Length: 161
Image (cartoon, rainbow, N blue to C red; front, side, top):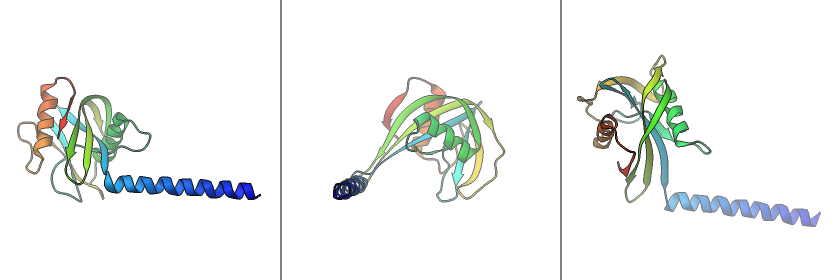
């Protein structure tokens, strides 16, 4: 009985130490991993606008535990833009790094998808098509570069956002 109690305490201490290390890592080495998808139709790109921040964005978000980058991009396109993506191609993996955190995002491109009915909700305020040569104000310069790279084609990139 005593041995079992000691093992239980040891297990709890290890778990507590592990959780403490995870917290320390998050505080002192913050890093995020996300996936986005550029949806192209002819000479237009589909963008979304969030309810909680300004500007226009590609559908996307964080990669969940056990999820591939491609699966995350497909899931987020469905959740945010109400799009069922058939085929995707990796455009690149990009970094946005500053003194407080490091964000990495895998960007995919798709021209093969199906639009589902869309209604604004708690997270997404709008879903709209924009001409590639007339991107909306409020879109980041990095996002505009990604659109140009997607249209121009070429091998996958790895660089700064």
